[in-house]
Length: 355
Image 1 (cartoon, rainbow, N blue to C red):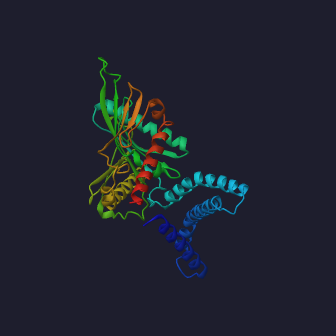
Image 2: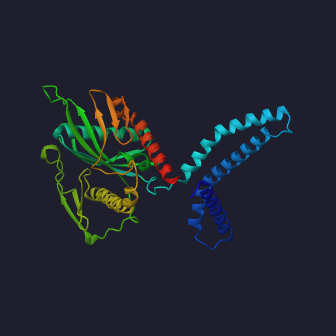
Image 3: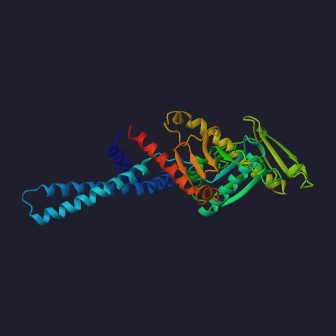
């Protein structure tokens, strides 16, 4: 469908909804939301159409033999102003017409796990977790740790958090995948560079209405919370392990002293993981047709390398290298990577729209 046909379809639907709302009797809440969502798109389309019409009229005036020199000069000036302005208006409308990921406005569950590389991988996983915590704070989001299985010397085998705020999943969904680090470990006497990795998963938070979980499908085990090295940090059975039997998905939580709170947090993570599995199945065909796979979310894919000796961070999906590793690890430099990934995904989808 060409762009003009898409415009006409949106304008027709907007008028149709206005008439339905005026007549009443339909699903008012749904119709009202769709009408409200389409409002900014319609305004942008109308602004683009008006600009195109004015540019056409100015071009006609420029070639009008009966027009005086001053009128032609004014028309020429207006034409070139509009010519510079129209591409941005067109891009704005195209971006607004891109299919929306309904999960984009959701909160997110962040999971970071140490991969290959032993204790160095666990230390890197902890640094990544702190990086996202700082980035969340800079964005004005709330970051709450749900589970942190630490190693006792600063690393984590696994850490899970909820990130709450506006558009969290839309900004962070491209962080899922394998993050590789290259550096000389503090424990390395010979000064050799080691390579290790951590896996990041960003899942949209799911509501109970999104995922129906039956009690009969759950096995819930309770046990005593343990700290690093296996020492007991709690004398009551407050830690919770929940197994979803149909999918064999296992979630543990021992961060709270209350068994009830640990169970609630574990259920939140479980819902998110099952919801993501459902989304993955639904998106499989579409993802298979994607060309650059910026947003594939494949957690086995190596997406980024952090090279400390060279001070660089490279995102392999978009071939972007930043020589500001300290800023990235502190969280404030991460936005440049996030913004570039969002832009690359939009460009990819715009190209698909034009095919």
